[in-house]
Length: 56
Image: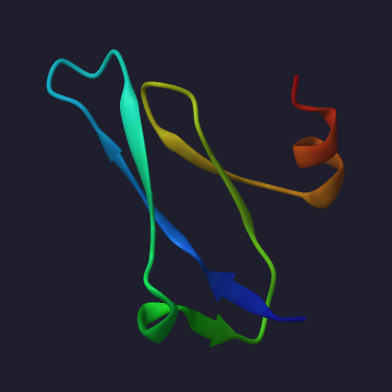
């Protein structure tokens, strides 16, 4: 599998919202596995492909 980092997720002060910043092309990294990471407002959690597809 491949893993590609394409952006950065940063929580705003107070934790009520976040911002997403795509990385410039020269900072995109390729890795050997695919991961889905979800931030629910409190914490991040690694998801399986099936869990990621089920998100609404």
